[in-house]
Image (cartoon, rainbow, N blue to C red; front, side, top):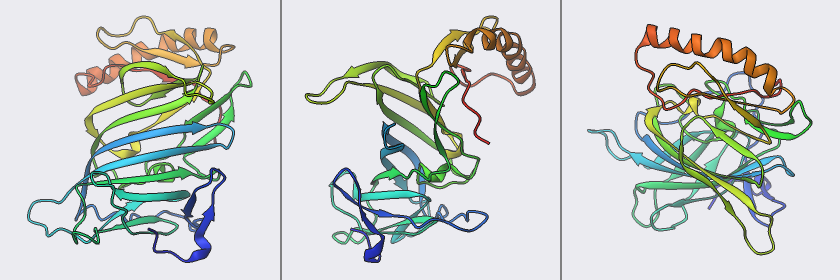
Amino acid sequence: MAEEDADTVLHIADGQHAVVSPEYTGVDLPLSANMDEVLLPYLELKMHLDFERRVVRCLATYTLEVPAGRAPPQHVVFDCCDLAVYAVADADTGEALCFNLSSVLLRVHASRRTGVLPRRVAIEYSTLPRCHSVLFAPDADGKPCCFTCGSPMNNRSWLPGADCERTLLRYDAEVSVPDGAVAIWSAPLAEPPCLVCSPGEACRTLYRFRMDYALPPSTIAFAVGWFSHADVPGMPEGIPATLYAPQSLIGALQSEYGALLPRYVRLIVDALGEFPFARSDVAIMPPCL
C-alpha cells in the first residue's frame, strides 16, 4: 500500500504494479535511514537475475531491532534509489504495510492493525535499468555477465537498507540464475548449488550463500556470468582461493594472480592477524568506470 501520487505508480511488464522512485538529480546521496531508532541486524535476501530485461528482482526481509532504552518508532527508513517497489509487508503475518518512496529513501510505516512496526519487514522490489550499483555487460568473450559496482555509499540502488559503515548485519542470500551461469558472492556457499526446473520454464540454478559475520552493507557484492575458474596455488594454509574470469583470459590471469595473491594475503595476515573468512576468491569483471 503505497502512499504516493498516482503518477509514480507504473505498470511493469510482468503484470504487476510498482511504485518507482524518481530519478535522483543531486550530487551526493544523503543518509536517511533512522538507524538510531531501528537497527537492521539480519537480512534474508532472495534474488532472480533477468538478463533479458537487465534487472534484478528481489525479496529482502529485514529483522528489525529497537535499541535498548528507545521507544518503538512509528516507521523505519531505508536508504535507496532507482528501485521499483511492488509491495512491503509484515514478513510473519503477510499484512501489507503502508510505505512512501522518494528518490533517496523508502519509509515503511507501523502496522495499522497493531500500531507498531513488525518484527520482520519484507520488501518486494526490482532494480531499474538505470541502476548505478549493478552493471549488465558482455565479458571479454562476449558472454553476458552482471556484477555489483557500488561504492561504500552506493549499494542502495540494488539493496534498500542503512547505507552506512556504522550499520552491521549478517545475511543469507538465495540467488536464481540461468542454467549454466555461475554466481559468486561476498559470502561462502551455504550449500552446493542445485538445478531447479519448473513446467513451461527454462531451468535455473539456485545458489545459497551465508555470512555469519556482522559486516557493513557496503561489503555485500556479487557477480554472475558464464565464467571459467582456476584455483590459485601457493595460498597460505587454510585460505583457499579461486580465480573466476572469461575463458580467454583465465590462463594469463592465473599466472599473474598466482604470483601476487598469495603474497598479498600473507602481508594482510601479518599486519592484521588471522584471516576471518573461509576463502579469498577473485573475480575479473569488465571495465565499469
